[in-house]
Amino acid sequence: MRALQIALLVALVAALAACGGSKNGGGAGLSATSGGLVADVSKPQIVEGPEKITASAQIKVGGVAGKHLTLEWGLVDALQGNESQSEIVVRRYVTTRKVVTHEESVSIPTSKAFKPYLIHFVIYAPDGSYLDSVDTKEFGKGT
Image (cartoon, rainbow, N blue to C red; front, side, top):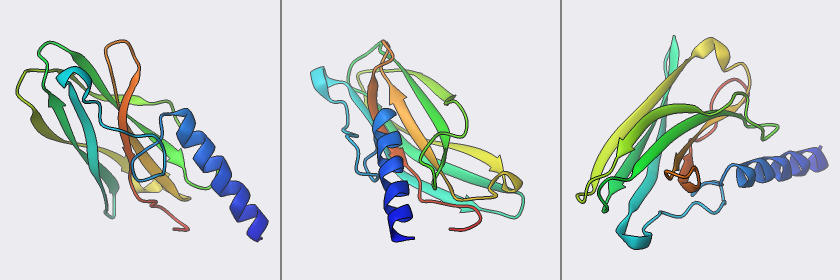
């Protein structure tokens, strides 16, 4: 049983590394601040209700005017470490010199959380390259 748990943990770490990692998942999630650009994803939260599960994260963007950034989210199978769906766009930002903070959230029906999941928020640069990400804690049946 212990070997299975270790194998699942290794698979989860490999999957998160493939999608950019996360600050709280041990990946390479660093804030993008090169050249004055700020793109930070932090403070993930989960609220489990009777009908829906809502995940949220704090997003800080700005520092350089006119950059087009994209925030996406993905539902990740916490046991197998792979995405259960393709990433979905939450919001597109056009940055200003002023750094602004946004609270973004997504919801899924509680009925879809029939096993342990987590939600991965990730922000991408205009060229599609990874800037920063964060994962929620695990939720759903079996957590």
